[in-house]
Length: 486
Image (cartoon, rainbow, N blue to C red):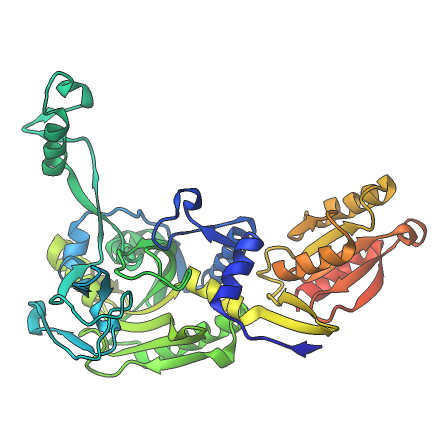
């Protein structure tokens, strides 16, 4: 077989929609600015990635605990963390077509935040072109905050509560309601990261778990950022999911360099274990001047996407900035009492941050293969790791119109699905079923034929090699146990 692996984003998007991994959100209404829905195989793959991460980083370790915090938090959280003041991108608008872009992503535009965060300094060369119309006629860059704002609670004014019926006889009903809603809604924000909830909950976590430093708190959850220019499929979206750890330690006792390197190695091991191509991942050290002011070291793990080498995951030493900020703004004690030294300390933090959606995309790009089988025949196959494949084994009757074959195949399927992610497939000929399962990434297909009724054996076909062998039905579980755990 000859590899023909020129993977493009167009091929990945086509496969994802065709096989039910990912489709455009709200598609019947024309979609909504780079929003995506995960279909039956996509949601299972996503769940498997998260489950694998949780097992790897939390369940198999003694120094990790979990958290599932609310998406909407007290807005003071974002004031103390600095997000309200500083979580922003430079926005620029084309005067010709009114297309809005991130100024720092247009070649020929140099833009920087002024010292103290008060405005922007910038220069625009003649080579700078609008990515939409190609013209070079821009507005002055402005600061655009990425926080998504919403409102909670009943609408009220001066202690009175309003409903739609109160203005039924008013000629300005809609206008009055609009004014009241604007004035009185309680402004809150959809969290732009999961990390802050871990810091805010730190006192409750240490009192309830009784963990001793060093230890980590892990969380998987949705985050929201009002990106100026989302794009490249599920790489950059306004709604996404994160897998983050805040690893707390005592800077007076624990060697942060050692902890940092251990977490870096764990992230690298995890990426390989889920099938992200090691050759396409590059650990990039962020130099002084480009890191956050509180960070002593930051690494971006960048992946070679078809649209360029971009950030996949991150690892950052955040110091004690976050806990100190929340202590200052809340007036609550965020320290940890070290019984060995008999003193209080505000722990420092190392943060491994991994995006579920970007991770899934990197896995798809790493596993996608096109293989020439001869005579112009090309098969598309996702060589997913069996531990995360949405379907681990598919069971076929050779013919769907033969009740005895269907009954035996159903019997095998019912037994296997209790232990593995299994699928029953009798649609089309066996060759088409193989190709469909190849594109889903199913490691093994089992076919029940007429000989199976006589010799008690089935044909097992390997996804990667396409080799077929006869295996006794009684030995199937042992066979799959050996091969799916490789």
